[in-house]
Image (tube, rainbow, N blue to C red; front, top):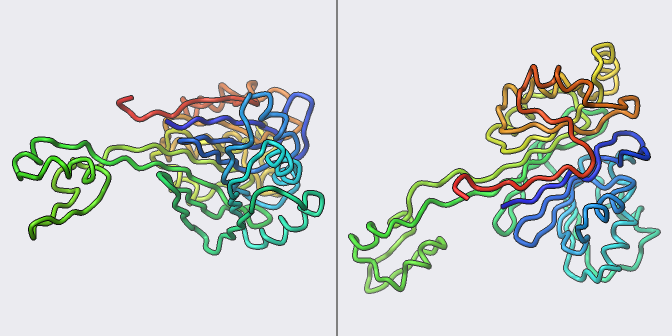
Length: 303
């Protein structure tokens, strides 16, 4: 199971009723934060989640509305008695940006490892899950992220018995080990069924539509995309500033076919995103005009 909370849905500037865009994901005790604009700490506190388990922060790009809340968040994590290492992933130049922001957060009880994305698409593997970064089309270097959990096939007892595999090896084979005894080798594929569908979450803001977004969003249980503007009259503005309209985001979802689409990163001029809900759902039915604090649990199909 993956816990997901869209902490804030605003773009450009925080508003009294809308914090800047930030996403928190929790999986098996690990917290992953994507972006950290102003208000992220407040939104996290309102949700009731602790900053202490945050072990990974992914930065999409270096515009202030996506990273200016980082120094305060680091201090809050330290005050929450976090001592485990923190990994921050982001575009080239990340280490310099983080070092500059830490002028006001110089002393922390945990180490920080900055990992700069070198390729247009790059994967990072952690214990039990993978984060895939993919470059998008904004007016500065910007990345979207997919968070995925693979799932092995079911253990097939009948196969193990038919092959006379010792009982003591069953659990270890299920965990992916290859074992040898009496010159016989036992491999996981001898007792495991085909891989089952895992879980996948894709998040992307601040970009024009690209084929890469569609490709990375395929098979997502949840796709979160920016819907900066809703009015058709704002299409030229979206192209000029390299953002997406709500209709463009819905069109990507229609092609990628995620189970659900959440829109986020609204322009301050968009007071009531739900006014555009019927239009968006007319393009992709399972669309949500997300509000701050919207949460869900992504579960495996048979849970």
